[in-house]
Amino acid sequence: MTLIKSVWILLQIFIGYHLVLPMILYVVRSFIRRQQHPEQISAKADYAIIVTAYEQTDLLPSVIDSILKLNYESYLIYVVADNCDISTLKFTDPKVILLRPESTLSSNIKSHFYAIDRFKRPHDRVTIIDSDNLVHPEYLNMLDELFDHGYEAVQGVREAKNLNTHYACLDAARDMYYRLIDNKILFEIGSSATLSGSGMAFTTSLYKECLESSNIEGAGFDKVLQYEILNRNHRIAFAEQAIVYDEKTSRPEQLVKQRARWINTWFKYFDLGLKMTGLGIKKLDWNKFIFGVMLMRPPLFILLIISFICLAVDLVLFPYMAIMWLLSLVIFFAMFFIAFDYFNADKVIYRSLLNAPKFVFYQLAALFKSKKANQLSVATKHFSDTKLT
Image 1 (cartoon, rainbow, N blue to C red):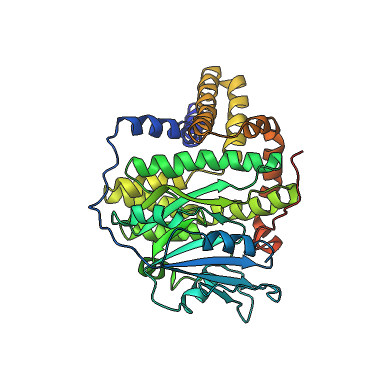
Image 2: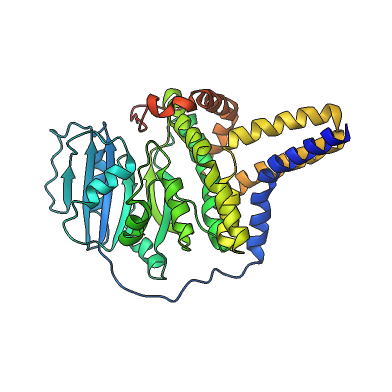
């Protein structure tokens, strides 16, 4: 009985620390002096902006129009329209290079390197934008502020473009939590911001070095990329003012397919977190250690479900431990409201929290489809006509 109890306690610690670690890091951050950057190097760079689309092209004119309004001189836009009908796409600006692969790529990395192999000139930096994004006019200037301090990888902000349904609002709420913990706080305590698939930029040489020989299928290239960057002793900077506006999931079927791919990715690349944590311990490298620990955190809905199961068991068997679970859950949810306050969340996001159980239910449905996620869909299909209900 003592052995079973010990194992049960250790299992709960392994799960429960994920609930309170963000608050611990938040408190630690308040005692750390302002982030010290490397020596500043001021120089305007030439950017390749790669916009990837899969099957859908209806949002491309909007994202290209927003990019062409950038307050920046030296850049070219490479649109990779994978498995798309481009007969109706007409881009007259010479900055836009429209590319349609001869065969279907069905891969972010393959699309990126399809563009890289066709660069019109040797660009200093490459930034990745999704076809459903919009770009703030100062996006590249804000990236420059971090690159000018010597960083070679920078993650910007993916702010919600739409809050038209409760699902979109809850998706935006989740993003705010991750943005505060996994981007801002991690970077400010001396680790790295996590990559988010778009709104990110790299020196072209680093991107090619990390992924040129990779053959990654399905979602999750950003997981491999961030591992490779840290493995080369770089830090990923967070550019809080480099904003892209990201289309949030607005329909249940859309949410299930997207989350199934993301859940599949977490299971597929969980070992990268273990490896990174081990490297951090072995080399006494804070950047690698704390980043690896955060990579091992399960998706939030899985974390919550397991936590409530543990709470229910402890209420019957170990009431004193149930108190610890209740306290940990309060701390966990408090971090959401800290994030909402910091990022000035719209009131509609607060109102949408009442629908959180339904949001969790659809993610649970996604869990059961995650094994075949990449067969269900390759990219998220977006809808512009959905209204808040």
